[in-house]
Image (cartoon, rainbow, N blue to C red; front, top):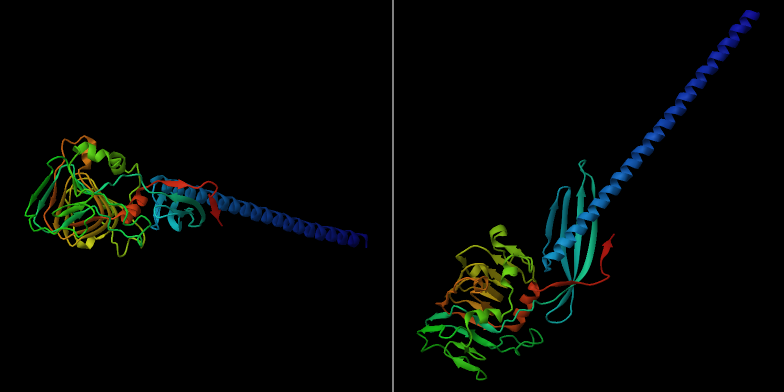
Length: 371
């Protein structure tokens, strides 16, 4: 009996030890699993936080780069980074006056981790877009002179804008053509049409206040425009919305948003512009340009070398040629007006173009994050 009792006690003890061991193993497994889950959760939280922080920095960097370029539009500007991209665009809030407007600039940073996951953050800043302080004091400024061939066409400094276009419309009559002494050379102007206005000096084919001003030398004419040509063409003064050698010439039907007045850099010599390139804004031409056919342009045409007009162009704004003289170029070539060039000063279009060239003033206290 005693032997059986001892054996039974040993069996009971062994069973208890086994059960205790299993319980201990289960407890350790539970603790290990909980520790693993907590570590995994902490790691995921850490990765998500880091992704969010990186997305924030990308959004902030994109916003800073966009504001540094100097102009704002509704077009989306994309900045690429090693781990993602930032998308920046403007939303026009309200016009302060004819020449200035408040915009909200939005910047969305999208960070992507190696596993394909990531995070996005969006920032915004309100800016005031003001016009560039250029002095467009004539319909055409031609420091190399102007050769007019044929009787057709009109170059007029009589403001073609009206009060319906903007508050200053119709009040900014300027010179029609500014050339150096002896700079206007005409052929076949005896039958050129004379503008109907009698409030300004008139010359066949030209009108303005005065119609033709030939009182200044070439360099003084360009300096009077206050155009910082070196800074402008280098992209330091304002960022270009389109650079022809990189993006091609933009389509005003599909690419340029309604109401935008883009700044377009034409950095290819001997550039030919045809009627399909009609549009608005500011053309910055590094070298020379030929305007052909029924091309229409509203705004500014700023040209480093010479302009040739063939056909029947309609320009409502202003043209300045020969700006490379400001870069110590030896001389400027004359503007060649061969066709029926209908160029009229338009103060409201010039204002809108100058706004695209003007500085963006960041409004204090408007930086915010959009959650």
